[in-house]
Amino acid sequence: MATTTSPSVKFSIRAAALIYYAVSNSDNATAMDALHWYLAALESYRMSIDDSGHKRSWDTKALGNSPNTSPASPSIDESGHCNMIYVPMMFAYFEQMQGATPDAGLKHLNIACDILQAIGPHACSFGIQHKMFRSVRSLEAFQAILRNKSAKFATADWCQVPFAREPKAPWDRIVDVAFVFLRQVHLSKVDEPASNIRDGIRAIQDLPRKQKLEMEVAVNRVMMELVAWWKEYVGEDITIPPVARPLSFEDTSTSAESLALAVSQGPFIYGDTHAAGAIALFNALTIITQHILLLIAWSKPPQTNLGGLSSTVVAFQTSISTQASSILHAARYIRETNSYCGDASRVMFAVKIVALLALEDDQRDQAQVIANDRPRLPLLAETQVEVATR
Image (tube, rainbow, N blue to C red):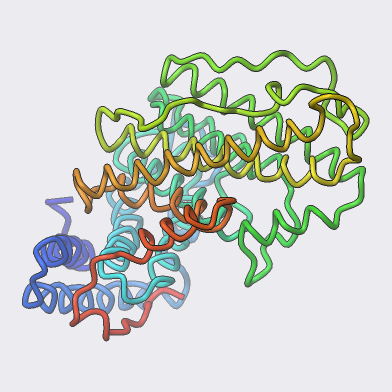
């Protein structure tokens, strides 16, 4: 990117670098400079879109590529692709750092997703666009879950083809589990404008019995994926006795231990911020799946046998509390280690899950405080920046 001739790329990179320095050093003068470069980048990007004949410059034909293009003979203009993806990514980063317009960064992220989707999964299997794709896909998974939306990269092709040349890291595999959830667990109110993950989960209570059973089976598949990831990444075994048949409303005698993913980790000792981010994402996905199973358990008939349903409910409640505590611990660790690293934004997804789905008032309150405690400069807090890309 250092050799690019695209003004919007140069301006957006400079704006992102300056806003990072300004926020991390509480420097309003540099923030003003960053804002000027950001506005220049927006104007340059708008002009490049207008010059393309009032159509999106990432149109598949214009790119000379198809989502089904073979990786053996890609017709890829790598420099052009990188320029188109890089600019909205830098815009999203700027909006995230300055914090005055929360939804503006999401609009830029959606543009980056559209561009990647247009060039196809094969083009995202190598070069800089592969690295960009890995960043964008995790952010898209987070936003799709939080906002109860459909995800562009949840398909099997998008989870496999871009990694044909480079093996997945543990972070990529836990993001895969997030996409498994989006692909297999069909919550209500998906893609409704004002919906979020909490709305989708609460609507489960109103579903008919058959749909609850189907959802229970799908969620337990996701839990098995989480167990497998934990064993691989942490090297700690999670004992879950095998269940003879799919969990159902007739199968209320299943022991709580076979349902609860209770990871007795206490204050986890993280090697670095990346590990904290990965484990926090695991915790967040566990809270989501167990919250769903808890609601389904509450809708089952009461059991008179010893233990039974009540022990299952208590096990879920205890585990959700454990996972939420782990996320709050990870967020504090990252804040003390490096408040402005990329892993901080990843952990913020998990913090928002705690704010929405934790069962304890105190945990939800703590998560809300962390989510709201964003560094904001007086200059930018009063500035509303128009998003160029619609």
